[in-house]
Image 1: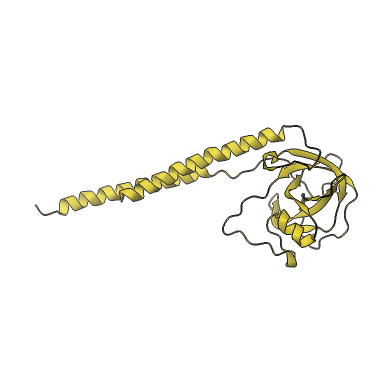
Image 2: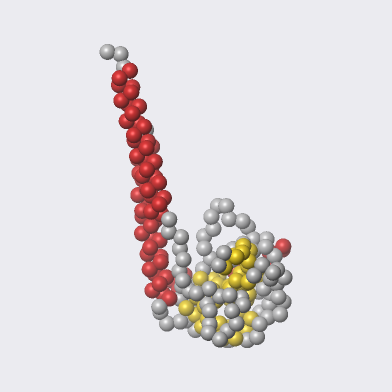
Length: 217
């Protein structure tokens, strides 16, 4: 029993460490959002995640619809679309925002040239139960610039841009405000592991006490 208790306590401590790591991610993202915006794709790397960016260029068809995305409790799609910045030979995938469930047929007509304002994002690590994208059926469940580049037959940057709301620009698709949102339930998980360790310790103590009373004298 003692090794089991030690493992449970270790898992609780690990979750506390994960909590601090997640809080550092949130603080770092907030700091980067406050920095001056980038104006070119060149030299952008993982250290630029959550940096604001401003690009002038043109949208390139087609749209890709990201499945099962919510807005104020409504389920719809996020619209992904390549963007060709002026002076760049490589396009970048942009999450333009949310559209209602009736928007099921991707629009083949690209929007007019425009100024793109957004935030640099890198694809998140997927969980073991995350569904796979199925490009041939138009089923996209997570943003994967590499898979999108192969499907569209054009080079794309390894990151994507999350468009943000811009004053005077139509709100369809509905772009999301640049708010770092990292799920941080690690304190709850830590309490769960510590509670389990306490329960096992109590059961072990009761078993030892009962075994001691039943031993022949």
